Structures are given as structure tokens and as C-alpha cells.
View 1 (cartoon, rainbow, N blue to C red):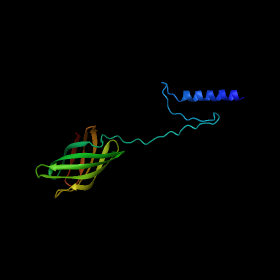
View 2: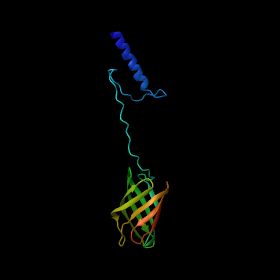
View 3: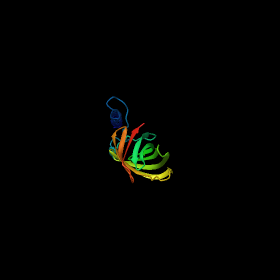
Length: 161
């Protein structure tokens, strides 16, 4: 009886060893039980919700312009952090005619097609300027264009640098 049990254990071990290899013979993880009569439960499949894809990555700099009451104004969007569908950025601007420049923080949320940035705290606020929100879409992996949501404002275009 002992000999038969030993052979069964060796056969089970060989079966587990073969099951632990993929089709090219590479080792992969497989559950092991000391008792061959104990069933091994298959792991529950894990699915994570698909995260929207965005061209935004931390440390990127996007450059372009927007139009508001003061006229065309040069702009930079500096990506600080991207976590899932949210991003933290710094919006910087410079208006050549008046010499005004400033910056403020923004928080963005994207769904893979569109992005909306909401204005946060000022870093440097020039007199007479109000922070604005941005809403746009990626026309390709290197171009973001949309609307400036503020009084007297119209559109913006930013390109990945």
C-alpha cells in the first residue's frame, strides 16, 4: 500500500510540475497541495475597470495660446501628476502686449476623449486677471484644443513640447 501511495504522490507531483510550465517550458506559478486528494480552488479572475487613456504624462510641458478679453496670450500647461483619470497641472501664461504673466494650479479629469481642467489656487496672480477653467479634447497625441471657460474668453490650442 505504501508503494502505491508513493507512486501516486510522485505522479501527482509530476502532473503539478507539468501544469506549472507554459507552452514554451517556462516556469509559472501554480497552486500546490500536500494532499493529492485535496482539490485546489482556481483563483478568482481579477478585472480592473479600464482606465481612460490620455496623452498626459507627468513632467510633460504643453505650449500654445488662448484667447480672452486681453487678446491672444501665450500659455504653458505643465503636468505635475497623472493618476488614473485625474491629473494635476500648472497653467502658466504670458501676455506680451501688457507684460502680464502668472500661473495657477489646476485639477483635470479625462474620459479618454475629453479633458476638463478646473482652476485652483494662484501661484502668481497679476492684477486684473481671473483664473479660468479649460475644456477640450486631444485631436491627436500631441495636440489639445478646446474652450476657455471664463468671461470674455474663447478658445485654446496646446501642443506637446
